[in-house]
Image 1 (cartoon, rainbow, N blue to C red):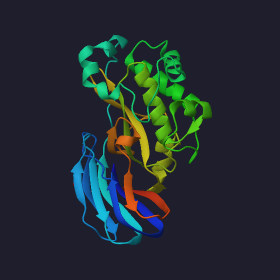
Image 2: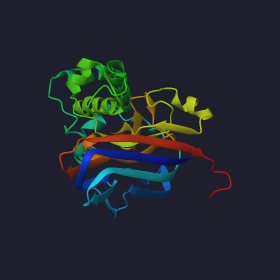
Image 3: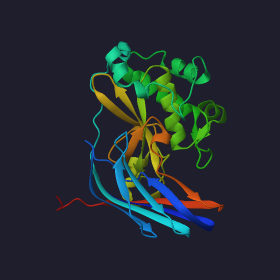
Length: 296
């Protein structure tokens, strides 16, 4: 599929600020399942942009404004082609998770991280162990844990802040896409499954609609927010992408920006400024489905 994506961020300040420094992660990545045909970042006021790849291979764009200003608008525009993701082949047995080389190669995605914290014996681990008790393969274990996450959390927009803990999520019983992803990561890592956080865009009228593939067949343009899901390292096969919020495998409707241990490694925007102003931001992602007929 081919999508045109426009990600707009509009910062407003209650009074003039200066020395505003920002980093933006909005450019989709090029990989085996998607290809970026075009990309540009527009800023108002217009400033120079420095693009680099971070440790995880995500494009990070740095920009700064020294002059006093009361607003800043950023618009990231991309055209991306996606294709279906394969499913894992023959499901490896659970013993494969104990392979020393496999664990060493994926060590960073096995241990706790800033937003994915748990302790041995706590409720996160207990829920994961109980969910995986009847699994005979890695695929069955992963599916059972993701199902447990979906039975624990109900999607509700704007119900949490990014600093919420996994235990608070379980107690509260609701969350948004990054919460579903973080709880899935914590439960899976607690039972020895390496997995990573993925930030991106989802072509869907509602990011928490499990029937979004069917629902978007009749839609050619949607207005959404950025989305989050997970990828699991399947021994002997590769990364298996799953969307815990929707309970589906990741496919052509998902567009990856980048990945890391959790949200802290791939925030869409991060910045600071000098001054005493109160800042607010409006964010919107508009995605249009484009025809690929007669195009190369």
